[in-house]
Length: 347
Ligand code: GLA
Image (cartoon, rainbow, N blue to C red; front, side, top):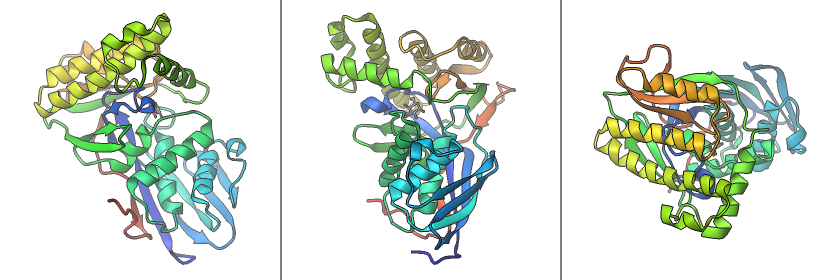
């Protein structure tokens, strides 16, 4: 346990998902990478039972009396994440500090997920936990802060990131397999429009999956031939996306291992079409951005990334092929930089 006055610094990266969207909350597969855009939390413990944090993204600070309560109605909205993490940790001791972000806000690159992880490490008070414990704690906090039943993709990506690698996440077994990214290609990301998952039809999609599972059993185990028992055309389409997306993730991992970028690109574009037509989480602007990318020479494939309803599109491209996009580098996962040594107790 650190004494009052000791400086704490933590960092947590955002993430972008190469393929495997809307699969995590039914225990399926996803293939994100932690990106070289991050949240940094700096501060000191205080004996007074109050968390005070400033943010370089919002002029209104978070001021949370402890023990934290009333998470969902805390103001300003970003402070809900602070209150939720403090509540999950059962934190009673105060903290005073700052939050800095280079993750674009509202772009679907998990700025909020990264904030939760950086806070959990900063406020964790030396309670040594595994990465998985932290990921699940942050997922519970995100659900409490937003009321949205999101999966564990964002938190696991931020915590398990590995330099130069994507991460094959099995969201049922909660396992992670690093998959090396090809050196002769770039992950490019184009910002399309602002979005928040709060207020989007995300929860409706989660509910549709659970209804489909009542008919055909766990979607993570289903095959396309099982889908014929779904008579409702909307449920059928939603379930078909999930089942085929899990399959595309498996194929994409094999293609990456075989350095077959053409197949990787083909699978990414097929994923976009499935998210657009079967899952209906795309927008005309996202579709246009994907079209523009895939018609650019040197681009292997492209898709919307994350929840959809706005946000960003991602492409796999030959180096230098796309001029007006962010090139994302895969980086190591979240860590305590200063103040609480040996934080993780991974098995
Ligand atoms: C959001 C959620 C994740 C995941 C993606 C879609 O980012 O936070 O849990 O469901 O959408 O893949």
